[in-house]
Image 1 (cartoon, helix red, strand yellow):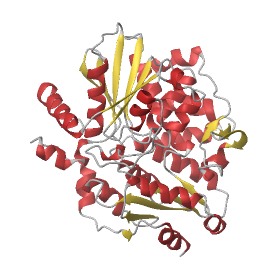
Image 2 (image 1 turned 60 degrees about the vertical axis):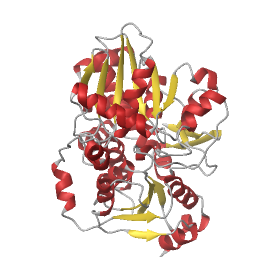
Image 3 (image 1 turned 90 degrees about the horizontal axis):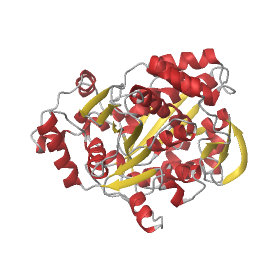
Image 4 (image 1 turned 45 degrees about the vertical axis):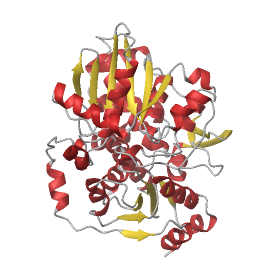
Length: 431
């Protein structure tokens, strides 16, 4: 697997280099030079296969030149050891629950797979890797639990002060060992900016082996393709058209699905549901992409004012917005609309959605006003509702906390408080 930069299609690096560099020096993002295709026989076999078996097919289609089948099978078996069940909301609407992993968020797929890929490549190398991660909520927890106690890797997680939920903060600050949590006095965009500056700083790179576990890293996106493929296989026999509705902040999750589609996964359409950080919906309306400071919402993991992975989606369509709009719809919703949707679904279906998932439900309601024959909508449920207790307390909805949350609450928290300053962050890393 060879990859180029979205800023330089003539660049060529191998998968291992892309995993550990994370970002090309030209500030683009890595993309595969060739997207191999899922053949007809493979697609037809998936209705008889399990999620891990389909995950192997997807990963090996991309990575057969980088990792042996035996090693990749071991990585898949270890990383993808939890389910992604479909819950029926209506005859034409399902919720894909992606929060059954250790951190109770969809990002467990990416975090666990990536940590084991890196460990595989580091087996015979005598060096330590420092991973830098910016999180607006769920990425940090998934990375922390995915990389906890992985030899040869130390992780620094930056998160915005006062802008993650209490449970999300517990997942960042109760690990210790090779995981450190840094609370930045700023927004998620500030955290992401500090991480990007670090990757481009010559002095830091001369002293440290820096890489990222954010969705800017290609090895985070590949495992997110697994559940798109698995879900399509579960529904293909009953529905001619499958539409995926993905709550989107940094647009990595939906980018993974759209890459799978370009590899031959038959998806009718993608819908990116956002909160009040409506950069992409506005771009689709005006044709002008305008990054802006993120605003705080109930769906905090999507509080992103300049979604990095949207560059990858544009690249898939040769930066042609008109071609892209034939495959992707993007819609935005306010906190009040989100709360109303959560209450409506709970009252009518006795099902509890997290604020992110609720944006997907709202998008389905908006798009499905124009009925489409033999079409099913799949809303990606990205986080367990227990991560957002304030929302459900206000709505008088009781949430049962999983066992791992109770265990976390008994642990001590450790975090580093830091100003929104690259000089301070750089000094900390060098120290």
